[in-house]
Image (cartoon, rainbow, N blue to C red; front, top):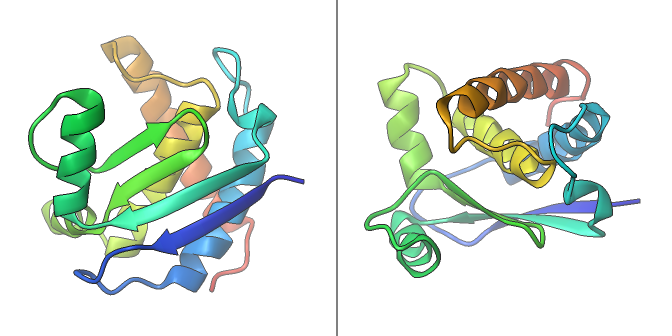
Length: 147
């Protein structure tokens, strides 16, 4: 069975790691049941790590691996690492009038979908991925115990 872990590697934003771990485990199960538009890396992985980082660390990753300046919300590596900026999630939660936990769930779902063969580079693909992301959050939230 595949293992998923959530590691908190930042101190800027207080997060409920236990609740995120439960959500991530359920989201992983639900994601694997979705039909992948491209071959799934996720199905071949032994483990997935969700790593919560600061904006500073995310900006370093963003520049090093994607050649872009500044922090971003989530970066997914095909070998099973999903980096999430908690500070960006907090800002986005305020912009969209939602909770930090909801934003973090969206980012976990987004990363899992990338590993499962979804892409958001083109607008049509992005629309499909956004719908899948919302469905995955809904399924994982509704079918798992909350922490």
